[in-house]
Length: 318
Image (cartoon, rainbow, N blue to C red; front, side, top):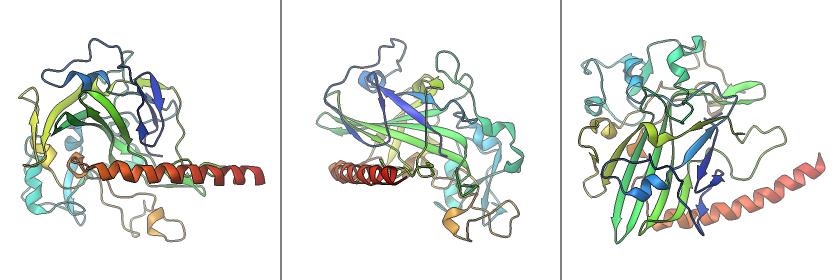
């Protein structure tokens, strides 16, 4: 499963589809402040209920570079900076970009090295000693502001399908976005790995979550403004690293070949590989979304209703 969580926003637990907002009340936490960041971006920022049985917690973004080496075609990149840091990571773009350069674990992930576990939030929801979130604000003008809340995990554990894990990968970026007009939320986009509203009786297509551990992502976060015209990032505090945001490659291992004894597939189908490739980072998450994105979501809502009816029929027949 991908990291499973409920988003607690404006006093509501949001599911895994974009939600139009009729009314909104910010979460009442006076400590949710960061220099220069629009206050409503902080007031309405989600808190997260992590699934109680998930062994993997949010992870420090920079620590991923300590436990990985850049590879291309499973070979170490010759001439890459050493050590890699959040201040020089984008230099790897000279060797290639998306689906070319992979930050590959120096450990055998099947042995469950402890760094994959991440950091469990404390009683206040903070991941002490670990910066596990990046908040990116795109001011689109005329009072229109999009705030992206990016959540990082060192590891993603896949779902189990037909008795086999599918889709494990090193590195994971999850996110949601809130669109504001004059400081008032208009819509929420939630990163969704599933077919909204559709779940087979045994549940292989949809994650389940509960109120396990409470995580307040912005309590341990970097905060940036994003300029779409120049495709550039500026740290609100003037000191947080920005170079890493320009990195184009992948944040985990490349999908292991069939010859790798760790790899397995259902009926030899590539999409069912036990270990898949790690994802790209925040820069590849469409940080300048148009209105058409949300028009598309209206179609998703329609599909959700159709799938819900199909699921009812499946349930009635079982």
